[in-house]
Image 1 (cartoon, protein in one colour):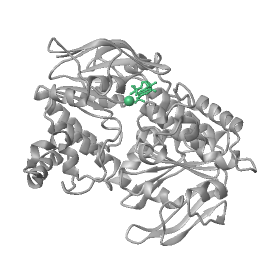
Image 2: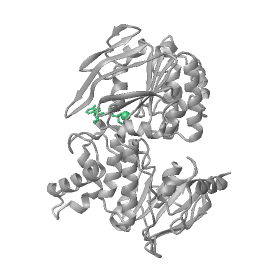
Image 3: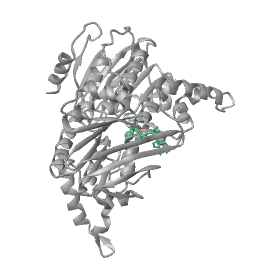
Image 4: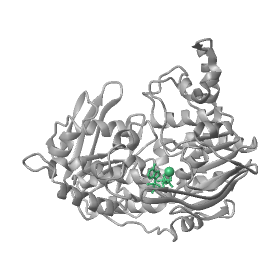
Length: 500
Ligand SMILES: Nc1ncnc2c1ncn2[C@@H]1O[C@H](COP(=O)(O)OP(=O)(O)OP(=O)(O)O)[C@@H](O)[C@H]1O
Ligand SMILES: [Mg+2]
């Protein structure tokens, strides 16, 4: 049994953990939940030796242990999948999987590649990832990298496995496969600690849930006896409201129009439009082409044929800079860890990066007071939990990084926003807050928004028209959601029909 006693951890400006005591049993799937910044990842990092507690002790089977680093934890049969993707891009898939025990594959002075690839293949199969062990990891998607991290933790054969938001970038199919793996671990007597913001997933998979709030332990409960609202209440101190949003003032003019967009071998004559003041949803499975299409619209990827019109005029968009400065289009990336933020920069600079041209004086110096004002407003609006605007973004909790990544585009004051998977990894309260912000941008400020989301409830709640994507084509459109009130189940069934 793994037991934590009175653990506290202080970072400059925050008490990340405050006197937390918890225990984790073999053969039990124990969920750890709480708002963004509650201290979940910090706790995981303390159990795995990455951080040292300032106060408190860790016991394994009754014996006090001190783990000075991750290697120490591994030698105590503890392993983890971290929230951040930690993959070495120019190493192969197999090297990444066996990294912690690569010495076992030494053959003289060289490495036994054959044995390494064979070992890796076993775990790749287990996690359902269809890539070659000798492939380089650089080009893989976020979901594939996540699965490699899971394969790596499994291959360690640890007795304690900690999973920090393992499903945040996985599709429904991969998630259900992961659940099978975790249930097998439980059968094998492994203690699994599972961090997630997805309440339904936790209720389905886990035995027990413990909740942290502002670094403090709130309580634990039996997942078979709890409902969604019980957990929400433990996390945010109140129940969530579930009112529908009403109607938008959508205008007849088109803010954006794509005509016959073609990229050889991928898209064939894709056409659609976005009206002013509209929220247009893009639904589809991962890989159905939604993000690729967005990247063409903003000039990050080239098209071979076709046209893009902005406000009825043909647009030549060659870069993100063109997008912001000439066409006032913003793009919130789904991949904040690798594209959305500069993790070594502070919060303020990450937010103001999109508005530099607006706040530069004629001397091309950044007006500090203007920058501070925009940044402060945005931190306030997004409710970003950070000790100061000068804190390094990489030190914020995952969900708070996501808020900064959206906030910087709101600060840019664009007329058209393409928002890709806005609430991956954010807690229920923050999710409702981000929904509210997106809705107000359209309703009160008349912005036109394309919302790409794999979260069907989110998409249905916010969109007033939905395009369904499959295999790089638009296979269906669900219209008149602004005029008619339709139930969630009716809309999701219609989407399902297009995908069947
Ligand atoms: N290395 C660090 N330096 C400074 N502050 C940190 C560091 N790591 C975490 N923090 C702070 O500690 C607090 C807890 O962060 P933690 O990452 O544990 O939250 P979390 O519960 O995992 O949140 P999320 O759901 O967003 O991932 C936050 O306020 C965060 O900013
Ligand atoms: Mg975290």
